[in-house]
Length: 255
Image 1 (cartoon, helix red, strand yellow):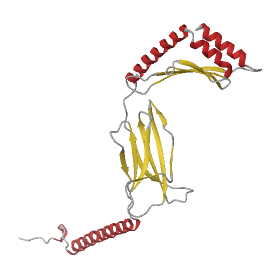
Image 2: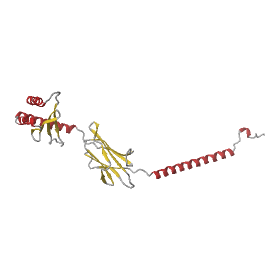
Image 3: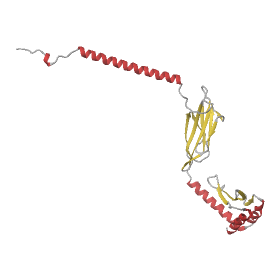
């Protein structure tokens, strides 16, 4: 460890110029499989945004990226102590990957919302948004279909955006000029789904038919109120003609 620190300090002195120095080390463990058998340890050393050298456990050695760092890379690759330390770090990577796989949430199916929005400043008449919310893992694929065929023209999408708690969201937009009878669908492909899932756009009711339905309903409602008013008026008229005598109008029967 001390040897590595001294080498790093020496590199800073060799490649430094007047002013502040900016050097940093970046190490990461990469893995894809659930059993963590494909763990790769990658370590990189930078100075003033220049990559000096990199260690990759797949290669099992340090590779210099500039000529002045080649001697230091060769020296590290010939050091048994350095190689043993790298093996120890690779084993730590495997342990950490297994813990991560055990504690990370299982695949979460996205909630998808397909809707039409106002197409502002666009040559097209309609704009659709297909939004996928609260899914995990991050990788997802959202595409558009017109009459069952994939379309890319007029399509824009956001990146996967973090929701928090390891969940993500994404939004895909389609601008197009609708034609009678065509079917538009949004297709979502994600690890939580056994197969890609289709979400069809519900056709909007025809405006002419909609106005006709509303007008007919209004006419029927008006007719109903007219009939009820007529019945009420008739009952009131009959009640006024049939007058019930009061007690003062009842003649007394004299014995």
